[in-house]
Length: 77
Image (cartoon, rainbow, N blue to C red; front, side):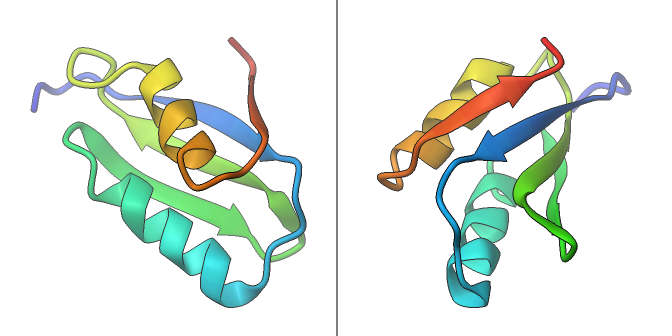
């Protein structure tokens, strides 16, 4: 990975329980180029992902969430 880092906010439309949230955080965190992915406990529909845009595109991160059968949007792009 390079030294470049940015972040994106992913809005997840569905209400998820703890197990599903942790599964998605883990899956996103395992993508090459992702430094971290976390959902704030008081805003459980928002996931902040820190990543290297030279290694992975924000649209690919969104796709990973959608591949879980969820509806989501990128915020701030």
